[in-house]
Length: 140
Image (cartoon, rainbow, N blue to C red; front, side, top):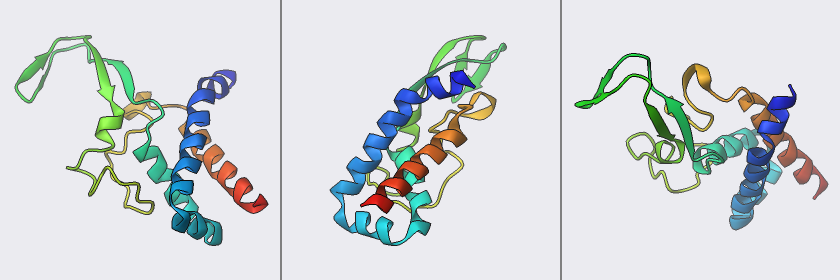
């Protein structure tokens, strides 16, 4: 448990800063989020897509060769998974370089990494962002 809290401290800190940065850039969105708590989860999800706290993840490929788009990836190759790039891919997201809370989630959403090695603290991170947003808005 200690690992989950300490491993995510910096990334959550960065995400909280990014959350308020984007809300304060858009007074209309700030007011909407303040007035309608039901849209806050969508704001958090869009933030996680738009601003990847970890833009690149190191990974090791499978223990066997993989053919991908005409390229053979040797077994156990070191690879970098470009999360920030994937989350802004216009094949999957309309107008991907615009912060648009409420956009439909896509299966390609990769902020916490893909598959069985995804971030074990992803649910905690979402809850922390939602809680910070709720508390700040209640006190203002």
